[in-house]
Image (cartoon, rainbow, N blue to C red; front, side, top):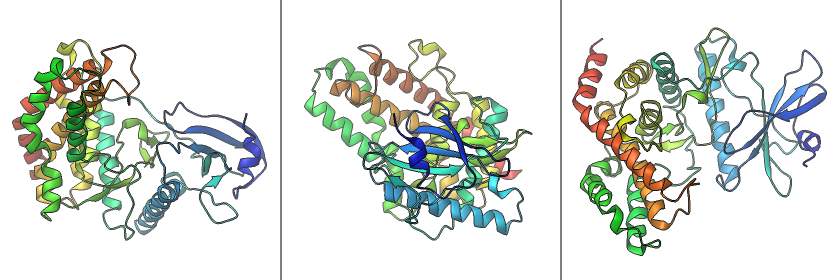
Length: 362
């Protein structure tokens, strides 16, 4: 059992530390709430950073520091009130760092945001809030002077993901290639179109932006009145195409079924969620988006089920070495469900184009 109090002692905190207890059920980092005994001292959040996933902690924390500082400056310039609840505040150690290495694990601390909560709900109302919040997050960071590092290199690089799949096919480690030939053919049919973001970037037509890269409803904090306070969980904030934040939210939020649904009849693309999220996103992000970025939002909606289909299929062919599986064909079931979602997105392309066009007129 870690001596949490001795870890906390390395950070500049206010007040007397009382109880330290587990907080939330995050899948990546271990998180604890640090409760102070004085009413005028803030409580804190202590996190053990998952060093296996985020291998360059110095870069990770530099990214987060640059992003939170820039957002804070934007909020001050805009005359916002209650700024301490609208941007994360990280604590420093005696050495001036925002993390502490105990010889085994990396730790960081931030101020606990009081009277705030997260929601798991994905309905049109909260999808709209998510669109506004993530669009605004990108907009505030559109002119950040710092160049951020990639905390997970090639995370949303479609060319890289296809390369991984093709290598898996060539090796055929688990002898499964022939049984999935249909899906491999369907993936290859779309490969050229789905890699167009990387191509457009190389041609100088598509910029990389600072993106969140993990856009979920539960990565926002809401106040007592249900208004969005701030975007949280900033570990994956890095340079990417805006399609990352747009498409990633819709892949999970607009799926009427489960990511690993065996009943493909349940898996469809929910246009009501798409419309609500897109309306909110364009309201706050339109200030900086280029016409090419807006034009390709339907492509972004298709890109992420396609990418996840590629990743699940590669893992299945490799013998299930990356994703946790609950049964022998789990990754194949996931592949089929993501492919069905992709087909549903493709069927709604014209409707998406029309809706975006109408949003821009209003």
